[in-house]
Image (cartoon, rainbow, N blue to C red; front, side, top):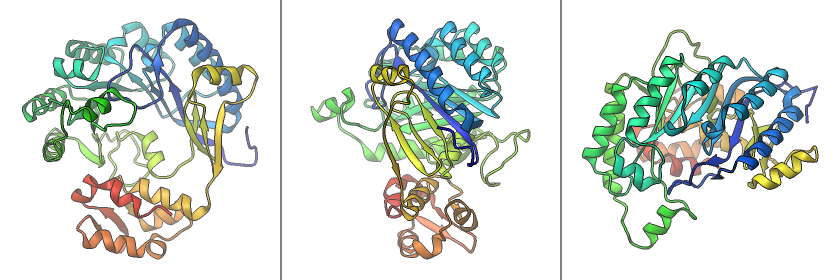
Amino acid sequence: MANPAAIRVTSLYVHIPFCAQKCAYCAFYSEAASGELINRYTAALVRELEIVADDLIPKTIFCGGGTPSLLNLRQWETILRAMEKLNLLGAEEFTVECNPATVSADKAKLFRDFGINRISMGVQSLDEKLLDRLGRIHSREMVFKSFDILRAAGFENINLDLMFAIPSQTMEIWRATLHEAMAMQSEHLSSYEVIYEDDTPLFEQLKAGEFSVDEKLACEMYEELISQATNGGFHQYEIANFARDAKSINRSIHQSIPSLACQHNVNYWRGGSFYGLGPSATGYVHGVRTKNWSNTQLYCDQLEKGKRAIESSEELPPLRRAGEIAAFGLRMNAGWPFAEFERATSFDLRNEWAAEMNQLAERGWASRDTDRFQLTPQGLRFADSAAELFLR
């Protein structure tokens, strides 16, 4: 509920859990779509927005999934009109994730009309066989067509999502995908190595010995990604994220972060507060972490009773929270300027984590000077291992 004494929260994440079908690698909470359940979810989401609206002045909004673009025009209009009525529109950055198979000119126009100004398109690959391998419902042609539709609708900030180290993906295929992605001239590029998560078809195939993981090739593909992205005019600002610079956007965090970086994600990595709405969504508000039920029916049941569908909440001790913020922030190339970390957490990185910083520096995974601590290019490749040292 709103806390009138507190500073209002400026970041909002909305989880839209529906997909046309589940992808082979996906471990996020999502389910196959049914029209009636989507309508019910839409009404429940509007109720959840109403509950938290007084505590929100969004600077960044991110609608992720699932496949948010799967919702039809009427369902999207219901959500966006509710946001308008609650004074939740007008964010500096309002992102919606889209699948290339579910982008239409009408939907793109509706998004623009309501102030959505950034699209993240789940491309994953531009190789037809690999798209089929991943269980994606779009073709390579749909990627180019959808991109053109979004440009024609006036979108000037588009992210392309790619994956590498996919089973049977060769370096030649990866190079070709990167080459074509660079030619599209998007403003942002996100690229992730395939992770084999429990309860996904790819994990089961790996366990069954249908393919093996080639760690050396994965490392070479990551190097190729950095090389092509850099040559293509992108600046790496986080392990998997690259953005262009545009002088029209104010760099509010640090000069080494490109202006077209995803500000919503930068807020996560810098330990900022955010509301998380929708099934399975997590939030961090006024020092309390919450997680909604990962069950759309249960989510709707709770909201229909007029209460939020929160499964769990916890208030972290300050040092533990500071350790998490340290770990997340190290994912960024800029690392942690010491003064900025102290502003964010009230702890001095040099006092609480001196031994860990020294250990990483000695290993060649990190560097430090009088102002900041950051991971080296090698350290970024193993950022998860480095981050674990900072958790308390």
